[in-house]
Length: 178
Ligand SMILES: [Zn+2]
Image (cartoon, rainbow, N blue to C red; front, side):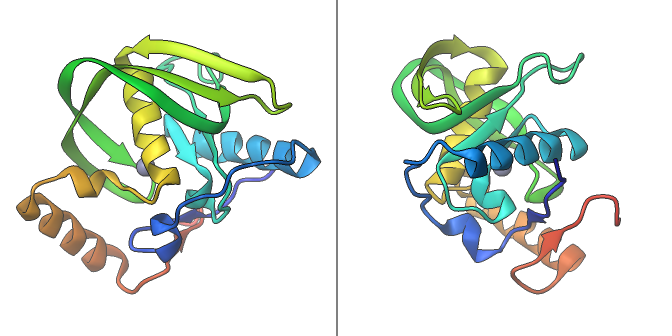
């Protein structure tokens, strides 16, 4: 397994719409393994493939706060099939925006479908933190960022912070080098 570089905003791949996975092969399994390892190394609760420069519809999530690894979900071709309950506002971060946390509004519960690493169907209805993380990560696969959900003012501040800290475009972050 390997820890992958994480693409930082405003890397253009973060705006790409990822492609449906059709091959459930060793290459996909390696991507899933590496994504999980990278998510844990970065101390994140979720990671989408385009954040590690792959444009496949793949996410890994783990909403557990303690005992990391105990609630790992590998979701291939995930789709949210229903938004349920009311809207809730919670503080959100993103591994492509290190150290930036902003209040974001999401649905409190969702139903989603996906496939596991072998192509078998997964159907889950959930609320709480898992529901929030899955909404954030599925957005990534459609080129949508949490930044897009902020007010113009907050967007401007976050963009300036990223530019000041990292400068340039198409940057990535190598864990362990900061
Ligand atoms: Zn993110």
